[in-house]
Every structure is written in C-alpha cells, then in structure tokens.
Length: 454
Image (tube, rainbow, N blue to C red):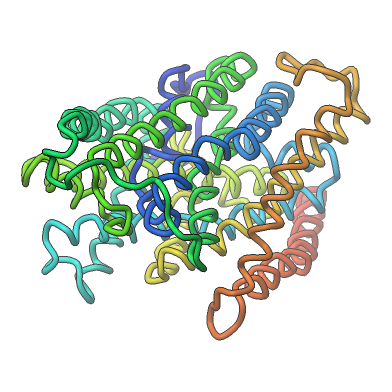
C-alpha cells in the first residue's frame, strides 16, 4: 500500500453531515455512560446537571472552538492554534496533554463496551475474555481508520441512527408506562430527589466528561470540506443534539418510575428489560456496543492527526508524516492504537478523573490562545467571530476554567499506582517539558542533515 498522497485535493473530504456525526461521537454518541450520574446524584440532580452544564461548559467551549477552527483551519487543530498564539513550546505542550489524555480517554470506550456486553453475556466478559474483547475494539477501529476520514465520518452517520434507535423506543415505552401512573410496574413516578453523598462529585465529573471533547473534530481540518463555514455550524448543532440525547431518555425513565438507585454503568440494559422485555434489552446492548465503537473510531480519527502534524513540524520522526492515498496517516494510526491498548484495564471512574484533569489543562491553553490571537492578530480573517468586544472571550473562559480546576481538586481523592490521581496527572503534564527539549534536539539534527551537502 502506498504511503504518500499525491494531492490533498484528491482526498475525499468530510461534508457537513458526516462531520456532525463524527463530532457527535467524539463528544457523546448517545445516552450510554450516563448511568453513574443518575446513580450518584438521583434523577433531579442528574437532569439539573445535564441541563445547566452545557451553558457553563459546552457552549463557551464550542464558541471558542468555532472561532479558532474557522480562523486557523489547520491540521492538528488546537495544536496549530496554540502554537500560532503562544509559540512552539506551548503548542507542543497542548499536543502532549491531549495525546496523554487520549491514552486514558480511549481506554474508556472498550471498557464500557465490555460493561454493556456483560448484561447480555456475562460469561464472555471476565478475565482474559474481557481484555480480548477490548483489544478487538481497538483493532477494528484502527482498520476502519486506515480507510480514511471520509469513510469513518460517512459510516458514523449510519452508526448514529442504529445506536440511537433503541432509545427512541425506550422513551416511547417509558412515557406510555408513566402515563399509567399508579398502575405501572413501580406504582408511580420515581422521586427526583436524592441525598447528596460522597458520590455526587463523581456524578459531576461523569457529566463533565459526557460534555467534553468538542475540540477533537478540529484536528482533521484539512480533511473537512469548507471548514470555515462548517465548523461553527457543527459545534452549535452538536451541542443541541447531545443535550436532547441526554435529557429526554433520563426524564422518560424517571417518569416511568424506575428507582434511581438501580442505575450504574450499563444499567440502561436493565431499564430496557424492565420496560420493553428481553428484545429491547438486547437491542440496547448491541446499540451501546456500537456507540462505544463509534466513539472510539471517531476519536481515533481525531487524535491520530496530532502526531502527523507534529512530525510535519519536525517534532516527531518523519515516518509519522506518511499517509495512504485516502489521506489516512497510517503510521500514526497504528502507533496510537498500540499505545491505547496499553491502558486497558483501569476502572471507569479512575479513567474519567485522569482524562478530565489532562484535557482540562489543554482546554485552558486553547482559551488563552483565543484571547492572545484576538490581541496579537486583530486583523486575522475570522469567518466566525464570537459576538461582542475582545473582553467577551475572557468572560466566556471563566466557567470552563473553573470547572476544570474543580476536576483538579476532586482528583486528589482518586489513587493511581499508589498516588493521588492529581499527582499522577501533574507528573504526566510536567513530563511534557523534557520531552519537548528532546524533540527540539531531534528537530535541529534533522534540519542540519537536510541542509548539509549530499
């Protein structure tokens, strides 16, 4: 297979709908993985979190991304923005934080894939069988990505309809049962109230995780048709889609009367069985597995463009610049898939904590890049610009940064390899400094070899 692309214009590009589907999977994919929010916070607080959080977390972030993605539509997305605004050192740190966060983020989806499947076939999901299934998710997603961005995005449109369809049926059945009131299987609607315990902080973190990842779609800007127009539109539409996908099913099962304490990871399967029988439960298992696979595949599409962009700048070995004719950076795809496979086996909550801390730090750098580009390059063409004067981006950044700092604070109670998750995450972040210095040494050596006479 060829490792080079003749021309970027020859590569089939993502249009609006496939880009929307890809972004949706990178952020959400469906109501799957929301169960711990209900279990730890109760229906009332779960709904309150999922309704309010977008206004403090998602909308400010999507506005920031809409402006930056349309202003600097370069491969590598946020890496390119931070590098342009703050220089190569901070650009490298942005990429380092995102790639290290991806190691833990990407382990979540094979993990929840197995947790869902456990409700249907528990004998297949224990011990070495669980690891084999998780590895299968990684391998198939890597193979799909080797077919190119357009193939993944277009396939994700169909995958989205399949993954969401059991929940449409679940909502209809839940509403019907809820209308029966006291004659329903639980004798009335579930209480929205729940005592706030130690687990409510976990509910907040899970909700934040379910609303993060908006910047991931921006790394494939060179493979998107008309990125200046499509990115701002996709960011707005995706936030609305994700909110509705989360809020409507939770409100429906609360109306049907299923007790909140029944919910933990994978409990949508049990809810489907209670409300619609074994057929609906099986459909939710299969759709939930497809959802996790779709999220993993689309995030592979996103993260693997970072090593390619860094290699183009000479900060990684030149072999990472290799592409197939369809545009897929095949060396980067295979290398990233291998690294993600190494993180399989962590618990769901621990993975979310580390992921949020590292991603939160990278998001702070993106807001700083927005503010600095506004100040240092005021005449830069901005097809989409956040309305208002230049202090508005500063105001927008306050809530997302405060929530990221909250995730840092909460992470002190989780332990990883015998140390607090916060310490573990900060050590990973600080390791980006010496790795950058080593990358610069390699970069200078390559430049000298290229400039020396043959």
